[in-house]
Structures are given as structure tokens and as C-alpha cells.
Length: 74
Image (tube, rainbow, N blue to C red; front, side, top):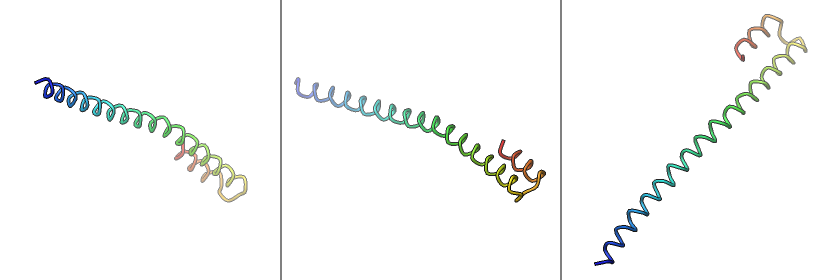
């Protein structure tokens, strides 16, 4: 009699622990992606702005083109 009750209790605890672990992993993954995405996005935008400024400095684009490109990036 105790064997079946203990088995069912173990099964319930196992599934609860597994579901809890999966939820924790999913929340950790989403949280890390959200934070890393902002940092990468900001660094990519800064890099793009620097490229536009360098192109203007080399004379590849004029002031109006530079202003238009920078307006899209900000």
C-alpha cells in the first residue's frame, strides 16, 4: 500500500520540479536576451552613426545626405 502512494507522490514532485525548472530557464533566457539586445542595438547604432560621419568627412556624402541618414538612425 505504501509503495503506490510513495510512487504517486514522487511522480507529482518530479513533474512539479520539471515544470518549475523549465519556467525558470525560459524566464532567464528571455531576461538575458532582453538585456543583451539593448546593448547590441545601442552599439550598432553608435557604429552606424560613426560610419555616416566618416563618409561625410571623406566627402562621399553631402550635408543633406548625412542629416537624412542620421535622422533615420536616431
